[in-house]
Image (cartoon, rainbow, N blue to C red):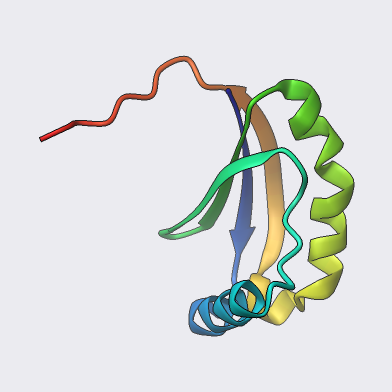
Amino acid sequence: MFARVATFQGGDVEQLRRVNDERMQEGTADLPAGLERAMVLQGDDRLFITFFDSRESLEAAEQRFEEMGDEIPEDIRGRRVGVAAYEVVFDEQRRT
């Protein structure tokens, strides 16, 4: 498993939630092929973390991520200040 972490600054979290919800409900989100999971973490920066089953799938998704940046205005999504890829070495979920 591989993770892509894109870091954003600024933007409008509430509008981003609304836009994301609308796109998901309408079926227009058009997420990259090979995407296994996605999450957004909000702190001082916003981290958009996506998971892929292979490095090749992650790399193939780059063009779609660039297109997504054109579809959501910067004043909503924020300004991307970094992107990095990581191999997921350990991922455990506690079961109760």
